[in-house]
Amino acid sequence: MPIKSKKSTVEKPYSYRILAVDDNEACAKTMMWTMEMLGHTAKIALDGRAAIKLAKSFHPDIIILDIGMPGMNGYEICQAMRKQSTLQHTTFVAHTGWGQKEHHERSKEAGFDYHLVKPAGIEALKNIFSVLDKRNP
Image 1 (cartoon, helix red, strand yellow):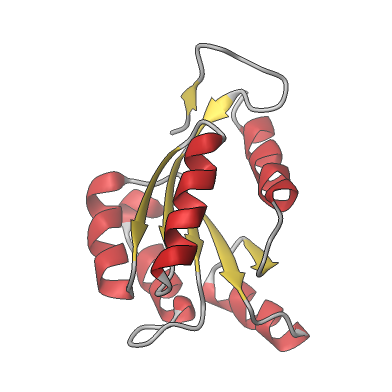
Image 2 (cartoon, rainbow, N blue to C red):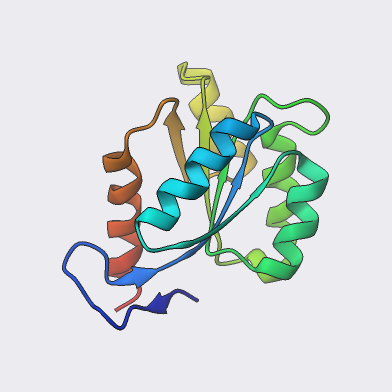
């Protein structure tokens, strides 16, 4: 569950636990730092196995996941994580360079809630947080 901030603001009343998964370490760290800058708690994983293991202990509210990764791709990771009972209420966000219609469709089929094309601007992420904030009065 998201944690209500003590300093409630109109823009970001909740602080989320966010797991950023990307095989590009610079991209993963940049996403983590951005989420922290926005007041969220963030961790990174650089591959599917590490992401699945970390999600079991971290219990993220949101997972921002690259699709095109070696080993397990983002579709496979999302499908595997969706089977975990502790992640039933987790929001999955594809964050990928793949933006064709078929990629959006495949993301939805794999269980993603949102599909953002890299580089996704901070406003696109804030829009997702805003939708989630409304679900958590």
